[in-house]
Image (cartoon, rainbow, N blue to C red; front, side, top):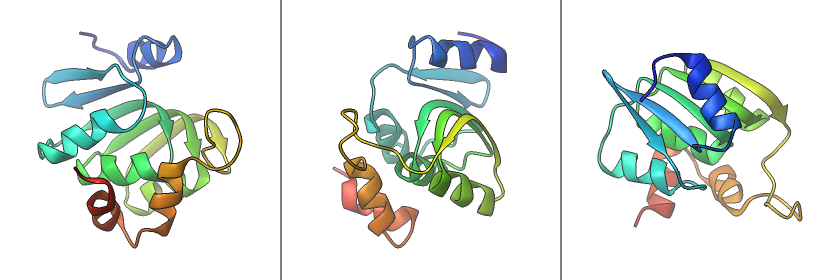
Length: 131
């Protein structure tokens, strides 16, 4: 698919993909918005090395952590996600750091963020949302 960080970031910024995940020598793209693509990776027990993601809130951070990610870049990242990922020892980069992830219409916090903030940890969050 592609080979360099710069290409991954540009694919996210352009809206071509919502996330790009490096799985060993393979690169996978998530083309739908939301968390379902990441939830599927967790359900399939995928181990992801590096991730480039459009929006990284605490909900996404919890899920990526369950995939054993070591590097993550977010075009937009919440302060809670940043703190959690750094605490886990991940290499973290972002373009924009925001206090929280809001709903698309801007009328309050994203519902998945609310669930993540109420969860004890990543496993508890996944159990709350898993199919």
